Figure 1 (cartoon, rainbow, N blue to C red):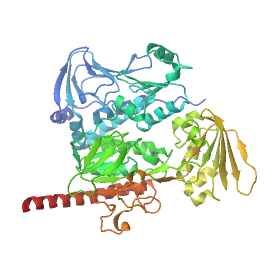
Figure 2 (figure 1 turned 45 degrees about the vertical axis):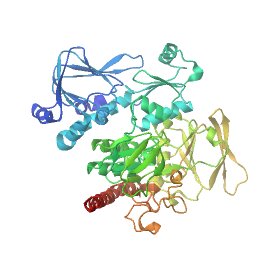
Figure 3 (figure 1 turned 180 degrees about the vertical axis):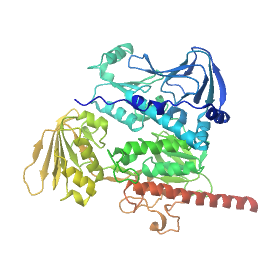
Length: 562
């Protein structure tokens, strides 16, 4: 029996909870203010926004996390030289832990904006602090501490939807099944909830939600805040995949006020990759979610504002001279900006099979993550697709399931998949590749798949295989439907035209609408790879600088003339 893996708090405790030297604390004093607390007084409360990053100068502070019974479990006792905080304090979001003064405490409080300034001004010290903040979040993710509690049957489509949303946004959560967990039954009785109303979500601040939307849940836990209608951003980036996050990091690092919108989660399709092995600088590979989480945290370090999940539904004012551009959101909020970067990527293609929608979210998946792997552990699954994403998913699933039936429409995986993945799949005995094969039917009821039917070219009869889960990686279409009526030029397949490609004299990566740019998978002619998307994210910031500088010069000229 394999040994139980150690938690990050056991293996990297010295990095999670470093002690600062007196000289280091002295250098940090200019970023904060001294505050005193009495014995028993709260420094942090779960669900409430903390005053900032806290350095203990005198006294002791106990940091605890809530368990499923709402009891506090000690994480660490901070003494002089220790600091409190994790990624929530970097972004000014609600605390995921409680902290109480054991005796009179003197502390240096550094608010989020000054913490970001500190991380940049003190490079070596900032690296140690940033590493600790990230590791502390990883520790909370391992236990689910401080996050919302989802009460509902495991495998329920809405439970999986909410779990997936929180996991992809790097937020702790706990899930309790009333059929097997006595804590769930206690909570259902306490809140007098009928089982027909499940799932419910208990937010850290005490609110209860009945089967919320992702946006409702995000607002309840403080992940999403209203956008200031009076603020004028230098750039709003629509889409938080590799291209959008790269643009955010470079824009933020160069001092541009930046807002990033995404209707689901950060990471895009790259976040769905179980392991990326051909990205520069990671010879042993890295999961797509880990890579994108690093970019997400890096952008916040440079002061980028994240609004996820917030969906842009209309682009207005693109030909309004020097007046700001505007983006209308699905919740009727508006974001005002000097420039817009479209990094909306693509939408997963859906299989043209009758009844598919009734199994989506429970048995048909577009993402192969630990959540989905746990659902089908030890079973046989079908995987449809032949690109790199399909190959990465097949390899990952093969380590968790009994068998992967890989259904490929073409003649050879090598026609559309990187060689290293083709070779790896060939070496795995529990992956069977069926070429010239199409799915012809799905069987099941109440959202639970029971069998998949497929047919190989040249045969007359279907093969029926009892399966409860199917994964679809059959490509994607450009996410540009929302641009209808804006006048932005698209190619025949719906991708955004940029630069000279649309016949106008525009800067590279600029659309035919001045001040609006497109990068990554949504752009016509782009190379559909993570590295290429990141490169375009960096490149567009140079174009933004030039355009913003030209606009300012024009405005100064108009003022002088008047």
